[in-house]
Image (cartoon, rainbow, N blue to C red; front, side, top):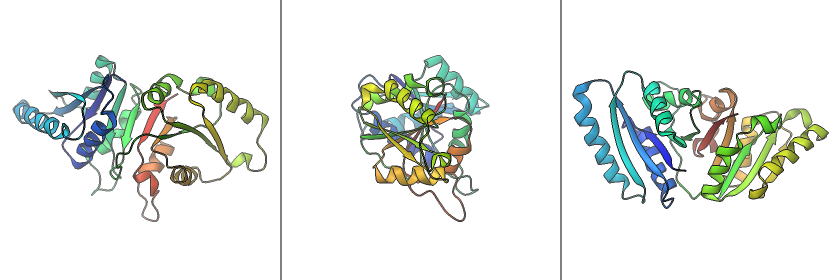
Length: 261
């Protein structure tokens, strides 16, 4: 990875994501991190630049990463971040997220899933309870449907080459509860060939509740990073929106890399 953008609005959510980012990228000397802030009034320019520089100084104590600061005026956060990512040919955007409750929501948090929909580059979503730990185990979820066309292998391999983790590939499907189909076996073989350099391990769970199955598997295998191929907000929303009756506890602490097919 060369260019990583970390948008900040100086909320706890975005500051937490910035701190996580430095620890994640520290030691990867080709990485350039851009702290990006959008303000809406010219009078706020000086304050914004100073706050970014102060944050940069704080982050220097957490790891060794080349950091640049960029504060720019704009009326729409998503538009400005999208333009910056395309102009810089960003490899990754790292953003925080919170629940959608009136108390928990922040500006950055409420825009994270919107940014995923822009499809400009992979988005690493850092939940509020995520604590940095070395990326040793990565979980890739797949629906095993037309995997060659639907699996964005280039950005996934870039992440795998950067961190050299153990790769776990998981399919959760209630339709195969009794027997694994020939079609399933063929798609698994394609994935095995696609990621042969990383010696993937394959798992199948025949359960109805997909998000809870991923939750439990990630906990059992000590997963440090979950990769989700984004085909709509259903799964991502389930992973992050806190329910009044239950909460996906593990996914309040595991970062999720969202990619588009």
